[in-house]
Image (cartoon, rainbow, N blue to C red):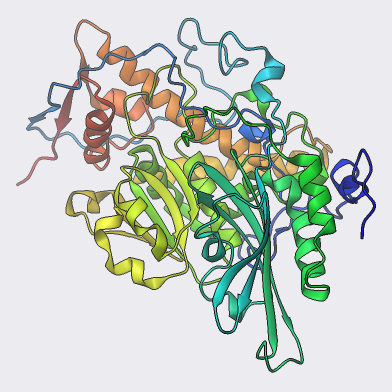
Length: 502
């Protein structure tokens, strides 16, 4: 038995984590750490992880002219014009275009203090142990509180195919809660267990943004459960220390992805804590997909249903779900309040089919290949680095065009400059994660700011010059832009000059 105190000594790891070697080492471009919960070189933008949680910004005032009831008109003008070279001024750290009136980049939600906006309390609503029984299959072995509904958690916290690997970690959704579980597989000399003992130890919380803090604890506890089955005192002490006091009438809604401002990035994040936070793998995510990241960016901005397939281990794939959602961040007030929320579901299995059927927009990952045949559940299917869609009208978005290549070139160039400044000047005030998140957020801001200005003008006509200024290809991106105008209900006329044909 573990003697309890006012402060459970088992939780001291959280306050004084051990130092992590080579924290600032850049990741290897061609070898992302697939099986480790601690990919090398991950620095993390705290973003909403620093405590803002998820917000749909539902109370913000709409900053763009919308007309959901009107159709979007494309005016095709014949001529011999050719698509101009994109003239984007993306830098990843700021725009020449001024911020819209009343926008303060240092404030996410007006009316709240800065501390209230990024500080988040521990809210652990459940802790549990899942085991694999050779006769009954996956089952919840133990949990606190004892009366909480954990139906389905036994499959979410132990992914299909996990028997082939030794350890893993999994992010998932359970109703209005988010979960993190650590899995381990240990060989044993037992005929009853068929030579292997498999367990997962996990927690549930109303927000995923603080779950990373407990990764090391859960990893230690699952090893403890494998070696000493049935000894739950450490988990009881943990729950007593961290259990949430939730409002009795909470609506239980899962809202959209976090919104960042410059000041929230890296706020109150100790370097040792960054290693296991989902935002910490943004650099590996972009290196893994390369230029394809621009294809995923468009689908995310259009709020498509994106399903990522990968065999176990699934932990790093859960990170890709999170990173994919980050591509659609917009910090302009009012943008996106009328569109479906891009909901990260993290790991899903066949038990989630009924839930996914009702979703208009989501990003999820799975280890079950059967999902590929269920095309009614998704718009975009990602298998390894292969991004595909069965929707005919989206096929043109799969091609990486000249403007996409230019944006990716700028992103890569800025990353190299950042790494150089860190190595030569010892500048550690910024990191790769800051750069990537700000790059896409500012890219999205520029697009919607331009659309807002055009929609609010006396002549709401979008020209090739506007498209080039937004970093879009006037020819190749016109289908994407038409979809964007329709999804966000922006009432402008798009003038498209077609290439002259002999």
